[in-house]
Image (tube, rainbow, N blue to C red; front, side, top):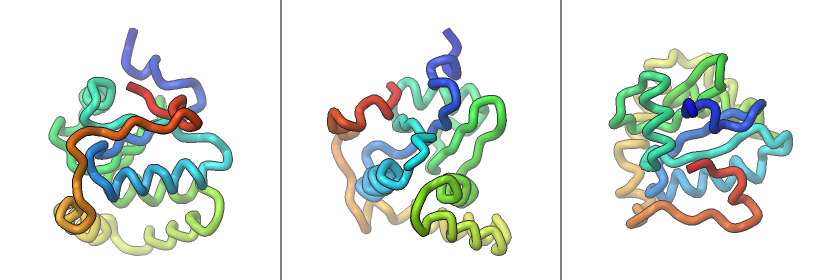
Length: 140
C-alpha cells in the first residue's frame, strides 16, 4: 500500500514536530478551529511521517510544518501556516494577509521561530498520545 493511500479521502495531512511543545499546542488549536474537519495529522518523527516526507520529496531532516494536499500540492514553512489558517474557522483566515510579504522574508521569520522553539517552549522526550476524542485525526 502506498503511503498516500493511508490518508483518508478528502483530507489534508499536516506533518508537525511531535516533540515540540509549541507545535503540539498549535496542533491542538488547529483541531479546535477545524470546523469543516479537513485535517489529519502525523508527526515528522513517525514512520508514517517519514514515508510521506520521502514520497513528496522533502529533505528528510525538514524542520518545518508540512501541509500535504494529496494529488494537489504540498506547502512548507510560512506558506503551510497560511494555507492551513485560511481553512480554519474564527479569525485564523485573516492570517492570509501574510501573503503580501514575500515568501523569502516570511520564511526567515518562520526559520527564526523554528530554530528557537525548543529554547522558548520546551521539548518532550517523545510524541504525545492524543486523547481518545481526537485520536482518529492522527495517522501513524
